[in-house]
Image 1 (cartoon, rainbow, N blue to C red):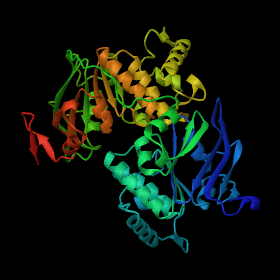
Image 2 (tube, rainbow, N blue to C red; image 1 turned 120 degrees about the vertical axis):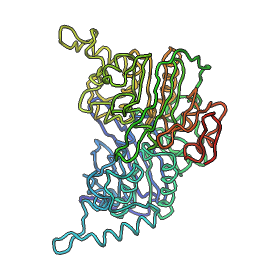
Image 3 (cartoon, rainbow, N blue to C red; image 1 turned 90 degrees about the vertical axis):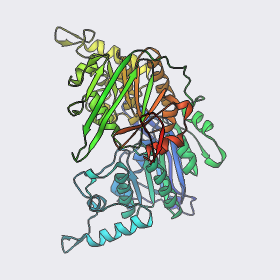
Image 4 (cartoon, helix red, strand yellow; image 1 turned 90 degrees about the horizontal axis):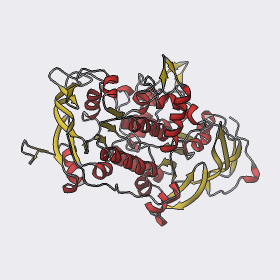
Amino acid sequence: MNTNTTNASAGKSPYVIEMRGITKIFPGIIANDDITLQLKKGEIHALLGENGAGKSTLMSVLFGLYQPEKGEIYKNGEKVTINDPNDANALGIGMVHQHFKLVDVFTVLDNIILGVEPTKYGFLTKKEAREKVLRLSKTYGLNVDPDALVEDITVGMQQRTEILKMLYRENEILIFDEPTAVLTPQEITELMGIMKGLAKEGKSILFISHKLNEIMEVADRCTVLRKGKYIGTVDIADTDIERLSEMMVGREVHFTVDKDESKPGDVVLEVKDLTVKGHSHKKNAVNGVSLKVRKGEIVCVAGIDGNGQSEFISAITGLTKCEEGSVITLNGEDVTKKSIRYKNTHGMSHIPEDRHKHGLVLDYSLEQNLVLQRYFEKEFSHGGFIRFDKIRDYADVLIAEYDIRSGQGPVTPARSMSGGNQQKAIIARELDRPHDLLIAVQPTRGLDVGAIESIHKQIVSSRDAGAGVLLVSLELDEVMNLSDRILVMYEGEITGEFDPKKTTVQELGLYMAGAKRQNGRGEADGK
């Protein structure tokens, strides 16, 4: 490791980490433009910004994944050079990435010790490592099963595994990159408690986020970036959500959805007795669910993650098979056994839950991803040949309309874009093509408040233009704000139907947790 300490800068620095004048340039974009960030010992310091503002890039510089063109990094007042993540780890810096860096077929314990495996006489010795992991998990309330395979545990448990990786290496500076993007509300609450506990123990935390309520709850200070530039640093005790959102977006943001009463029309989607087997085949993931979605309304399926919502949507869209006896009709036509393309060309648009697995071809360019479901249409092909000029023109329009930010415009590889801008690309593609039914699963996951405001408006516009919308969301604020009707799913069944104007988040929570359910007459039964 090359630490290149500078004695002149050494001394009693009030900052455990100081990044001074960091500039990082990628082809076509200045991701970080002369940014200074100062982290105090024992504080939780939030890094706030829009999608593509440069937050993850700045933290990747600190963790040694990128080398800056300009700028210096100091630890406890001494200048250091971080060439790679091994240097960062040696300096006590650890990072939990937005998309976890775990080996699915390894156990939790094997993932935690990977790269720093304890050996004796050349043989792997796990006993002491196991004891240390159990001790750390007990100390910090990170209860995990060290022998469980990563592929078999929840996303929340995978994140705990990532945190234990840092603690096992005795990292003192912990970087969390969008740590709540894939967590349920309960797991988010647990993580907030864990972060506060870590800070109380003397760890210093950098917390990348664009969820303002979480920053207000857990952070001590917040640094705001916008379009790669430093906007300012504020004490959380002296600010509010409105000020932070204005610093982040550069304008006033409205947190409530402005929409007229719905005017439901004909049934666009009808699902009868939909049953889907679970992954283990021991129990149905979806058990005899029936519902209708009409044109001109937004119907939301709410519930805690893992209660059958994913399998329910996969069956409707054709990603997985449903059991015999299930019926799915689109505009009155039975499409239960039709192909995904057939559904797409007959009025169904789908914003999928997993943007990497089902939303994008990551090694394709942005413009190629924007025409994935339309390249065969006359507008984009002629005589068996693709009209690349037409695709480029179309992509330019969507990039401008949906504010998709990327370093090289339409030719940018999708893989190199920020998560939020990848999501914007999917939303642009699905909302722009003709559709009678929009299925939107976690449509604003990973988006900042400005983008969320815009996407909510576009979903409402889609409803007002006559489309039916089936929304699946874990964000209760989004559920209450956007829905015309709410259906709660618990253990693969619909347990209640609600009017958002006549219910509360607390009431929904009881149904989501299985504490209450409605009987056939729409009345509540206690459990």
